[in-house]
View 1 (cartoon, rainbow, N blue to C red):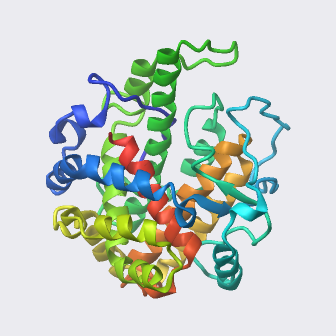
View 2: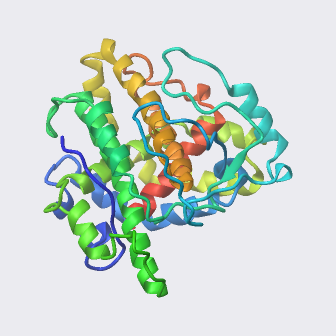
Length: 363
């Protein structure tokens, strides 16, 4: 397992959709699932984009000023508008969302994640979308890969700890794709780079960070591995999501789109379920040690407080909560999975929001 840094770009020469499945992965078990995702991704992306317009899936109560507890840092203030986020006006947050987030907030000593305490500060991921800010998060990612992920497990090891590392790397690949796409967009718009921005060539960044000849040769395969885990988790959470639609927690506009997504054949495609099955089977072989995974997902969420770009921090928290939710659904306490009816609003919103991020990353 090797650490990775961040970026990717949508173009014919350097996007995952332009690559054949075999160019992305040499793992024959994953190839059919990769092909299925590529075929369905446009529809998934369109539906996720529509869901991002709705309050349930775009509003998150986040402690954006929380202190870093994992490493000494020099104070870095990102004064660029691309880094900053602001809470929405109170009246823009539906009272139903505030109420359910407050009721569902609970402390679980050995839980999969600990989201920030409810407050009046909600942030809108649609108003402040993910993208290139110029912020260098390599210190945080190096900490994650070297301190939080499991050491001593090779990429092809048949163990859930290796699967965990792949999933984390897949989320990193999402950030990589966002960054390099943003560099390409900045060039296309004619916007000038600042003197501090050293990443200016999206093709070079894709090759360095995401290609098989780059710093992390398995970055693209890990991206698809994570995508498969998230899609399978969403499928398992279908009943819970539908129940929230019927109860009115999810508004009627979002419900219509969500039902279309949950009924997509890709969510029940056996080739896409391969990643979750591998994780499940591996976990059952050492289910007594799954507390180590729960401890790490809590740390993954909290280490986002060390990110010194507020927009990056917001989206990093959402993505890590999405990852912890996917792992929670697949593994639960003993490897057999969690009852999705126990999953909270913010967890479901983060799960679906990260499916959107994944769909954009492979676009």
